[in-house]
Amino acid sequence: MRRLRLCAMLTAMYSLSLFAQKATWFDNVKVSGFAIAQYQWSNPKDNEANSFNLRMARVALDGKVAGDFYWKTQIQITGNTSTLASSPRLVDLFVEWQKYKAFNLRLGELQVPFTFESPIHPVDVGFMDNGQAVLKLTGYSDRSGMHSSNGRDIGIMAQGDFLKNANGRNLLHYAVSVVNGQGINLKDVDQRKNVVASFWVMPIEGMRIGVSGWEGSYARKGNWTDEQSGESRSGVRSLPQHRYAISGEYVSNGFTFRSEYVHSTGKAFAKTMTDTNDASASDCNLSAIGSKADGFYALGIVPVVKSKVNIKARYDLYRNNGKWNSAKTFYEAGADYYLAKNLRLSAEYALVNDRSLSKHNYSLVNTELSIKF
Image 1 (cartoon, one colour):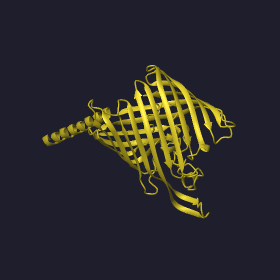
Image 2 (cartoon, helix red, strand yellow; image 1 turned 120 degrees about the vertical axis):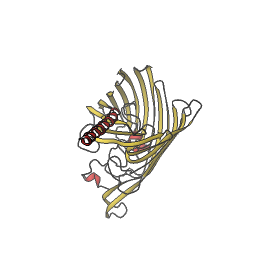
Image 3 (spheres, one colour; image 1 turned 45 degrees about the vertical axis):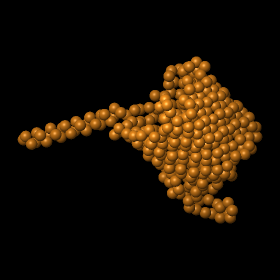
Image 4 (cartoon, rainbow, N blue to C red; image 1 turned 180 degrees about the horizontal axis):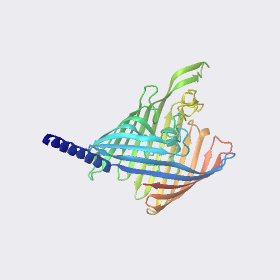
């Protein structure tokens, strides 16, 4: 009986220990998220539109385990729920070893380190969306034909900060990733990994100046018509992608100034993949837009009443074929009003010059209500 009682006590103690460990782990989990509701009006000739819209909502869980390991998972919901571009989807799922400030190692579905703006929180970007070059050349609505991937891919990344100054502030940052090159939630197709890296210096508090590079490919398995011979072909078609970005930013006391130039060389598929089960997933015909593209934006956000009212402006240019006949330019101005610390009402007016349209100029008004928790 004593042995049985001893075994029962040991079992109970072990169970309590496991429960305590689980409870401690659970207490370390953080829940966060945001939602952005939108109203937008625009009047391009013969294509006028105005609509309320749920632009984006996300819920994230993150925490630490075993001391040095940070993990995060995040789900996004937008608009309708029928396609890869706008259905509920996993946008983050990774574990990162954070023992050393100068060397963190992240594994999973992650934000690729390309441009300054792409990794910025959607609410904190400050405008109705990312700049056009960021959207088209970092995996959001990518010109290559990749499904919308929020600048993310699956792979591994090393990053860190180092070289402290006299005040203990790090002056240099690097991030190097090796990813599939197929966007979120999809396996590699051509077995050629993409290398995406960024490096920046921080000469004074709040300022960073950097460069990013992207070398790899985007591929599909399917059918196409050869552009030279006119013959029908099938199999894996891989399109090399070579991209770089030059970036600068200054953020201090509510003031934000940021500018980036992004350049891309690489052909694109004619159809954007929207569903892994429809024709877009296996259509390997090429787009007529060619292999060059670039874009530039410059923005400023200035507090009028600190933590309450901002005014802002942005110049945003993108050329889908690298030539001026495809240029699309937004001249934007607007303001933000903080109803509470994490509740913001924003309004913008944009004069849009789109040279691909018969009537180049039109107006766009965008208002958003965003909340973070």
